[in-house]
Length: 297
Image (tube, rainbow, N blue to C red):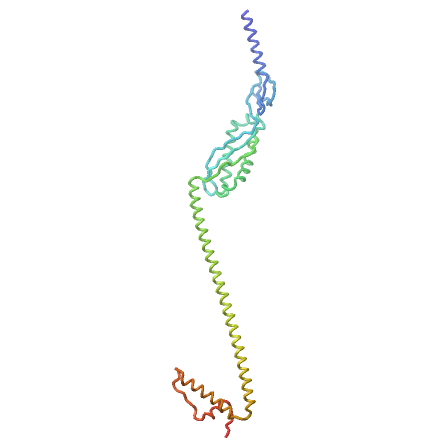
């Protein structure tokens, strides 16, 4: 009796275990990779699934949710031999679970190494300034570089974000010194430009002043010449009137001219520079000779 119960119990347990092994409930967000006799057979989707007990086995339970992979920090040498430190975060999705399981060993580890290697290669082709200011460009190049390899592994790269990219401590010190030197250089250039502009404005002012002075001298000379012409014309007219008034009478003219002549000699005699004043013996004859008058006898 006890042996029969044991056998019945064993058969019942075997049936329960067989049913449990043959019925698989896959939760939402996961897929199960099934092998049959050591070979890939099928991929179970979320819900109730039936397999052949003891022949079909679950090789892996794969998530269909997006996976975030933290890419550790690493030192990268740029094209101009600058050392920078960079890290990133990648978002991938498994679109073909059996490729991710059977196509690559530890797909997460392989994806990290692939991203780190291509990131070093991309930044290594850039100068320091470009690397620090071109995160979006680095991101696009990185996605293009790893997309084909991840496709072969049944993975899709959703996005790669460059979290941090900065110079090493030594490079930061060098950049600070360079920035300080650049600020000093720009200040010197600005000061020199200011002095240059001041000199140009001063020269322009002096030039305009010289032009105005020259124009003033020219105008004064022109007016002086006009005044001399007017005075000469007035003298000419005065002499003509005197000549017209005197007619052929020379004595009044000689008298007037002699009076002027004597006054001029008196001024010369009182001058500090005058030493000797010579008077002609025949003053009337001298005056007549000077002015072209005929001597009246």
